Image (tube, rainbow, N blue to C red):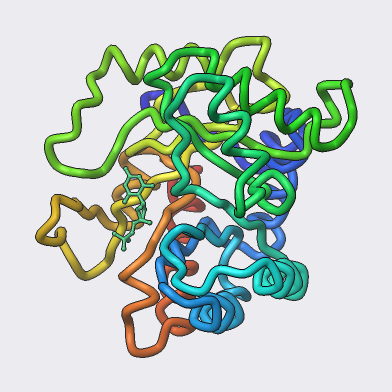
Length: 272
Ligand code: BMP
């Protein structure tokens, strides 16, 4: 993180992926670097939370597999809320981690049919490049287009994790960065889940979980840093906040607070 931060306006022109571009556009329009991790367990809670925090976020991250009453109709409603409040949806915690052929089916098949509604997905890099190839094939086939620049999904690679004792090494992170920067994936991979800036390529976005203003961690290994720390010191672009927002008494008010803090930190980091 020694290089100066490049303003989002400049990066917007360079990003080839449509989802990545739209995300940065939304961040600039709404002045927010906040992604809410909506880790609630029912569809009605999810929709209510999305409606409350919608005005303050660029992205809503969901864990569809923790919903006890998952149904596709709710996803249609969630999409409508995303349009109403102008945010994207990030089906993150599928965290694909298998061989290319399997993840291709997991992405496009099953009851969730993720390819048909998620804008952004993510995967572990442990299996090697085949995992990205498999997901990319599913995305291209879904749209029935063979032209790579028509891909309308964005993939984030897990380059680092927030949990205590995780097994990711600096070498693993470097290899993940090399995969993301590979020419072959430039239309599809939009960035990383990481603890801070891991690549100086301005087209790749960094999103960081483990962010809280109040807490230092939980009793299952989660570790928290503040919005200012991860944006100014670690150079990340988007903060991912779950319990700090959805467990607060007033999620909309908390979301506004994280939004303001994230944008202030971004502006401050431009002058660092
Ligand atoms: P919380 O702010 O409540 O700790 O939630 C963090 C969110 O980010 C969770 O949805 C978790 O699955 C996700 N996450 C994480 O905490 N650390 C990682 O390394 C990767 C994640 O996706």
